[in-house]
Amino acid sequence: MKARQNGRGSNDAPHGRESDSLSGRLLAKLMPLNPRASGTEGGMTVVSARSSEWVRPVTQQDPASAIIEIDRVSQVFKTSARKNHVALSDISLTIEEGAFVSILGPSGCGKSTLLYIVGGFVSPTSGAAKMKGQAITGPGPDRGPVFQEFALFPWKTVLGNVMYGPRQQGIRGTEAEAQSRALIEMVGLKGYENFYPKELSGGMKQRVALARTLAYHPEVLLMDEPFGALDAHTRTRLQNDLLNIWERDRKTVLFVTHSVDEAVFLSDKVVMMSKSPGRIRQVIDIDLPRPRRRNELLLDPRYQKYVVDIERMFDESDEAGAPA
Amino acid sequence: MSAAGMTKRAAPVLACIGLLVVWQVASLALKNDSFPTAIGAMRAIPDILGDRESLINILASLRRMAMGFGAAVLVSIPLGLLMGRSAAIAAFFNPLLMVIYPVPKAALMPIIMLWLGVGDITKTLVIFLGVSLPVIYHSFEGAKAVEEKMLWSGAAMGLSPVQRLVRIVLPAALPEILTGCRTGLVLALITMITSEMIARQSGAGNILFNALDMGQYETVFAMIIIVGAMGICLDAIFEKVRARLVRWSEPQFDMPLSFS
Image (cartoon, rainbow over all chains, first blue to last red; front, side):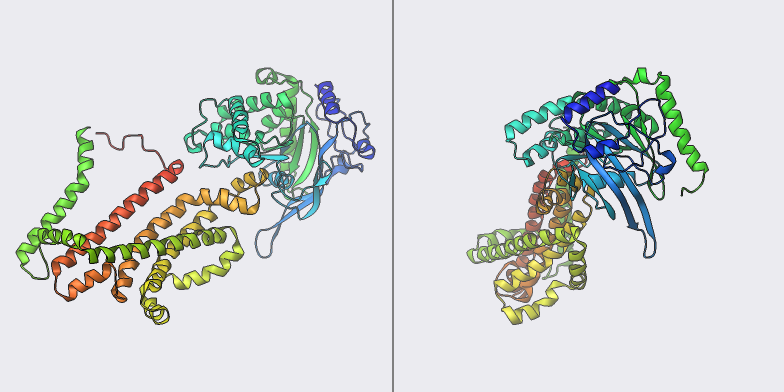
């Protein structure tokens, strides 16, 4: 899997963008669950606020390029007249092109806020996020969100929803319709083109939302607990379908979840966050073969070890009491 | 059609007939000049509708009502939507509207008449004021309730703030806006008649009160029926249009509501 992913990365990025940033890469995909987060300087490192605990020397081998760089981002919300809530504290994270990265953490750890900052929907209190070297100042079609709440346009049919983005991009009606119909078929909703969102189940709505976002060809998919509102069975099916779709074109995905299973099953890399203030606790590379098949993976001891180890780390931090 | 379906269809007609029967009986029993029989009042309807003068009056009323209603909707929907999406705009207009809201618009008529005369402008303005508030309020509530994530989705597709207001907030709030418009339509009819009662010069209200002055009680009751029928028809037409526009938001009742 590693070779494949790396090969893919180098195809997508003909040359490393900045040599100095490459030097700071974290990689070492040797053993599962080697806690690692590099504190070295350079844009492409994953740095947690408590990264010193995890610093280890890394050597550069992987020429994949960074698509999203989050640099010392903090977010403070005013909860009441006198209280400030620190949702995110000094987050630095680099996401490589073509990677499936999950942000995993308990509710209230600011993981969705981090995603909204990358989406440009929320401006960070301090720090900056960059997309392909450009500072993110607002939403744009290069970053396509998929929300837990689906956020479909209820006055549009399934087809109308999916066509909305391409039409906005100035694609001709007939062409946009043909593309959209193909996407609707890809997400398994052929025959439902003329249904309104309220006529669909939760799982179907999320399929439409995914197709609607894929329709305008964002370079990065920003998925905010997309399967959080679905029942277990539907959730499993959508995870499988998402993986199948993703394995076709390997778009960069930033995926927020609180489910350890989901994060391990889907991701190349899991960013574990801790709560109040939201910080990166650890970044874990998930070295499992692709294409991943659920029935194979659930029996795979490596998968099981990732899940158990990550769960244990969350338990430990809970027992340790309030995080620093 | 099933027996239950037939009953359901016939029910409104039966209710109307029932009302007329009660009226007729009560009128015959009371034998009061100012309370004509139902049949007498209904006989007066063709006389009114056949009279050129009366028709011109009624049409003038409807024209003012349409103008007041249309202008109010055109101003109130954008204002309400802006208030719903901008805290600053809401903070500016909310206190103003709170002051104007409970004031009966007809109470403002003497002043408006003083300034603008007793013509069309005054009456249209009163209708405008009467319709505006419910439409603003419902547009405001509807815009406020629009899911943030829906707007974010639009923003990610590249919609500008103005485009988001017109192409996301407006359609998303449309069911609520149309609820306000429906209330506004009935209020337009009420303020129309009220304005013609106060500034008696022309219109349906004018016919009604002239007839009252002259003791033509059958005409008075006939006019009440005509105005009432106008209201019912306008509301029914509006409801048809509304249901069509927001079909996507209506809950569907394809489940039988009873066990019969």
